[in-house]
Image (cartoon, rainbow, N blue to C red; front, side, top):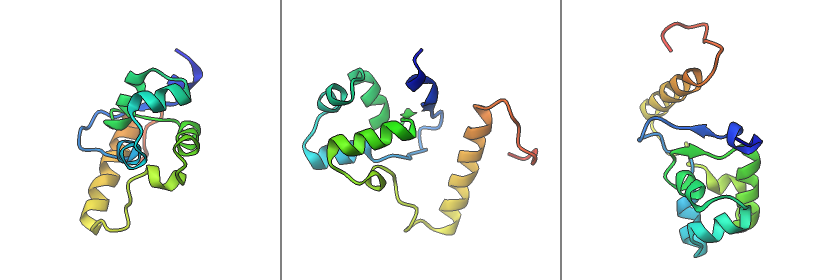
Amino acid sequence: MGKEDKAEAKVDSPKLVLNRIGAVLKEKGMSNEDLAGKIKVAPSTVSQYVTNTVQPSPQMFFLIALVTGSDVRELFVSLKDRSPQEKDELMKELLAFTYRSKRTKPKDKNV
């Protein structure tokens, strides 16, 4: 397992959509294979990014932005138009995911 693989995070919740890589690829007329070739990863890795099964590292997000000619912010879902209830639910999911994948535990036992 390389350094890049260790920095990527696998998302267990199918409804936890954090990136818009698939949408950006479609907007730019690029395929998963096109992107994979340019960022030097397997097409299956790009597929995992597109389906939000795995999240790229911050460095990989910047590389994808450079390759697609996008602003890196375009690669993330927006929280701007979400209701306070949706934001609270997302925060709970992210906290649960974060602490499931780390050795450190939160101070609050309810996470």
